[in-house]
Image 1 (cartoon, one colour):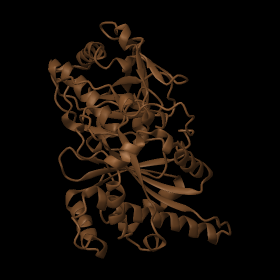
Image 2 (image 1 turned 90 degrees about the vertical axis):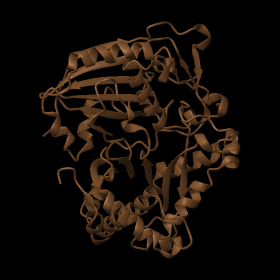
Image 3 (image 1 turned 45 degrees about the horizontal axis):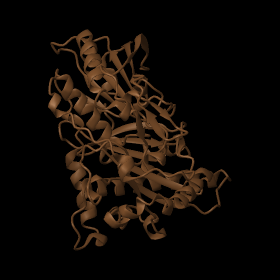
Image 4 (image 1 turned 135 degrees about the vertical axis):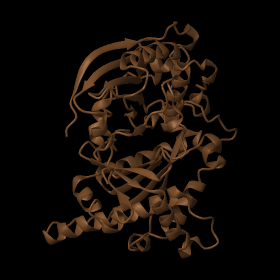
Length: 438
């Protein structure tokens, strides 16, 4: 069923004490500058039955957020995109309360993550000068879902979880748990040179699906790639290395199936394409000196593996698993030292963005949230029963999230409609992956 919500109230939560004048200007880093203009989202679900009522939850969230914003004051500020800084003016964070026309279980069992986007305070590609928003959704059964957005322009995925988890710790009375590191512009100074259009990768016409691969099948896939010739005398593939390679092989199968259909209909694309396999890599511990894991900002880089024709023609893309590992290994201290001189990278970034915009590149991106502290969150009424990503605003994107019970991985798939039709019917993929209702 389609989820319908009614807005009950809207207000702005401001910091409980004013931000000092000397902290009013929070500069963007170079990596912030070149990050796409979207919101990072997540939705936290709590079934009914807690001693804490939705009214009490709302009050505690608002009060604790107001206090917490005195630590993370950029989140209450407003972006000045022309001068590349956050004006930490305490304008505040929008807080929306809604009622939802269905029981919580209907949403938790859906395989269509786009339904969860309705539980968020913002449309993900409508990034403006507001850095954070919260939406508290109350379901017919009394369960609640807390939808949170933080601007990707100032925060990567790990920063998102650190912020939310430390806000939760503050809410349950553990004020000493709040750690703040707001120095990304000192590590990666911003550039005055014009960067590429960071919105070229946004694609609204994608469709999303959610699948689950249980732990036993994850291990079967790992074993498949561990035994391939490319991995002889190599460390066993990680879950992410093996899963991403396997899923990429099914993505290529879908690409080929669509191409064959077009050829049969007399409309083939003869232009040569460049294929890219992209992985996001956390660089905090790779820097010299390293920054703490709670450092706030965009401390990530994306690796680009260009699969050979041999890999693309191999049903399981076996050799890709080693290539992905090698590319990730290149994100080392020497590379990151060069990256701190942004001028050396701007032109290559512009070229890649241009190729993507013209369709010359067919990229496939993987983001792993596995092993991140997602389920560490507790506002004081227990851990969420489920945490989920809504549908993101990109195509050819796969997101991995550990299941709460440890039994495998949830996979969020974002493809064009014609590629999704082939992908979700792929027999090899369906040997291992199940929809939530299954």
